[in-house]
Length: 105
Length: 203
Length: 296
Image (cartoon, rainbow over all chains, first blue to last red):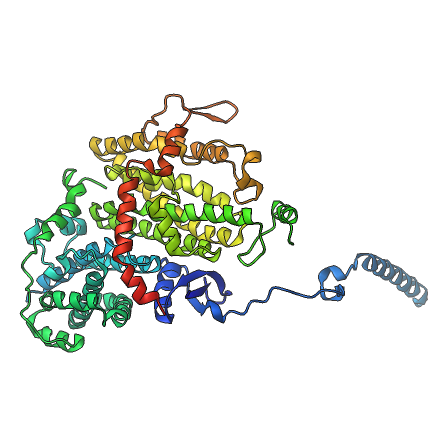
């Protein structure tokens, strides 16, 4: 079967999103048909038409070793941040007292 | 030819071919084509309306409230062609002829340029189908049948150009100004709801 | 994930299923049947309205109605594509539709009699449909859920158009008002049957698999809540003397004729045979075109 996948861009600058497919014998028919199915109301500024066969699907991943550094959940900074803030407060107080003692008489 | 008459020829052609083409909504050979074909029909009606609005304040009245014999549409668009070979052959012949006519009008009518820009897609569509079906018997037969009608769409001076573009020899044309028998049924159906209420009723 | 139990937990937890995923046979069959009936309904729904395109009394109405029917054909295309990607060829679905093996929604088995029907159908039938369609945005079968967005967006134009047609007529001549009332009188029964008999969500396998997320009765109540006030404010009468909204917000109404619904959707509606024959005629007539164009 001759499926052509249709990706549409709603406004300039936006990503092209998959919108559906048309069954057409060639690019010319696919264009004529996709234009109306996905653009007759001016809802798309551009279309990409791709024969389904040209699409290479990737949907399996290996994640055997749980490499947390690659993900947001691999960082829990809350406790360390609390400690660093306390340190900063203490440093600030210490600097303030030295400034007091260093003041000229 | 009187300018107003030329405009009415154009508008009536667009109205009636749009009306005929809208009949394919829901029954075209494939769903994808059905959607595309319906857009073409709507565009034609839109063009008719735009031209009527050059001639009157009440486009609906001009479009629908005349007696059948007052319509100036060419016999080509009046024919009831509810099989695809004939419908698409007419589409193709109509678009080639219409391009000639619109080009000639562009010099004096700004609206023609606007119509032309939309017709680009109609021509691509018609050419696409012509390319696919040109060697099939149903399409060839349909073109042969419709050719005299297509010639009659254009004034004499433009017919040589049409012959050249479609690659056919001239034959005796079926002239504008006559109405084919099925036009009465078309007019009847087109106006039946409108005629059911007094003139000026709102819809 | 290869067990039906895992799959069930997955979809009940909000999981989305794609065309290439493993799915239990029952799930696949149910989705396909549901989607196929929806596609058939969009395609058959074209026929009652089509003739009025030709009779539209103004250029604006002609354009709007043509565009509306065009949308229905477009929806059919979107939905048949989903079914095709589940493995059933379009030609097979058309054959099953023509033979009566596959069904389409009740409302499309009934005749239209006047321009009043045009307004009532576009406004109220499409309103009933959009309620179901909005619920389907959450369908567990993702390809189907995704096309619902476009479908719902386009249906919203239909309702506007339908309501505008109705408004023009109810503020027009007394005869025009009567056309609308008369159409409403005929369409009310099918409209009340449209969302199906009130099977509770817990007992509905379609909800079980998260194909549907809304119980039939909820959809009907939503329809009544939204549209009865709008109908009445125009001075129109809903032809059900028992129709009323209780203090607890629930609408009471005359029990729809579920026998009629079953009778109609199994192919015995007033216009079923004629419309299927019309479809069959054009499918047969234009087979050569598909052969010429779609063959390699």
